[in-house]
Length: 100
Image (tube, rainbow, N blue to C red; front, side, top):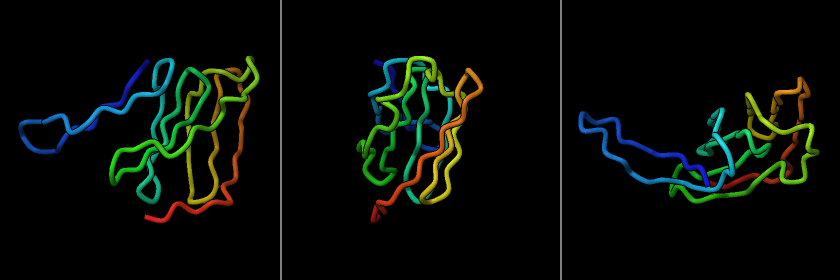
């Protein structure tokens, strides 16, 4: 299991929490509306609440084997675009609004 660590921006760089879930390297991050999006070489994008650091959902668990390894993600409120290592781009539309 691979994890993400949150640190404070103070001089002591204290670890606030660790979020685990990806099965491979976390390769990209994006933030929108108090949600952290983490893309991974495992082919998934995980959504995390920045308020309490809890997982919200996982996208891409049903991704085809040739679409693994996410290199970049970008997000805009209800739209997520993930670029995969093989050159494919997957666009996801969210009809659910996460109320924060």
